[in-house]
Length: 319
Image (cartoon, rainbow, N blue to C red):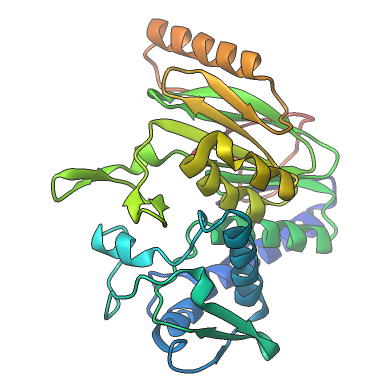
């Protein structure tokens, strides 16, 4: 996680960055599947037995996850943790059972959470974007006028400066392709092939089709632009799994997407900051440069401490 803040006195920037990292730590402590003592782990363990009161952060994320689940006809579903545990992407905390969906999640008064049947929820497909948004809120509350919060595949720009965003080429991970210039906007990128592994003789990835209960192994990257990083983060999974059929979901959340296929061809869904032709041309140009120059690709890496900021800068994202 990297943060850059600019446009204010040094003490304001420092306080803002400290508050932003504290917000990120709070979200991590609440929503970590890996931590057996986290709030999410408590919900996974007890919510099928009785109502579990949760924090505002966790309740907000679960509420949005269910909204996107309903809008996508079940394509986005955070109750796919049993598969991720079996494929060893997630640790095993006790029993790995249940094939329920978010339809079995009940959200009640006083931020109460209950499962109608045993569920195992993982928020890895939405919580990072939420953490980025909370970091931006903390920076703004501290008086920081503009900056960037970059969590690898999840990035948000705020204020009156812009950020040129690059994604990695599906067939040449060392090559970064410019796809958008962000101003007061967020982007998230998912590329499941980067985390592909073999499990019992077949390929698996951390992106699971909750209807088929099988892994998505497509060789493409998906970038979603939205007003908030939490929405962009979640919708990358919908677009990765359903491609062009996800357009109605994108429109419902006022988002847009760019799909970059293995051959470098680009597919645009909704309103994007770059045309398909331009993205495809950038992809081909980047591959040609890479074939002439085998040196590692240069990436912008933001500092977690205050620094001067130019009007534009560069980021390369992929998850």
